[in-house]
Length: 89
Image 1 (cartoon, rainbow, N blue to C red):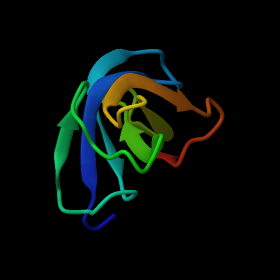
Image 2: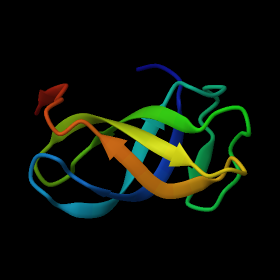
Image 3: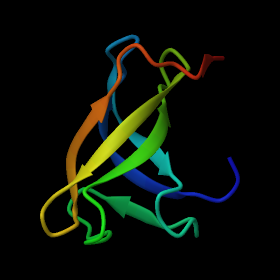
């Protein structure tokens, strides 16, 4: 994937249902290995970040859209396509 930025939040795996604090990686920002958590200000130019995340329980990698609030902070909410899998390890 090369350089990316990371957002950490609680994510429920769309494959196995495991819920854990997990890393979501995005290329929508500066790709400088920056790290954000819920509540951190990220940008006021975007409303969501297209990311990928991996489940440490079933090893499925999936697409996730991390939502930013009106101020541009990580809201802790996200959307995912439950049918989309990149690959299983």
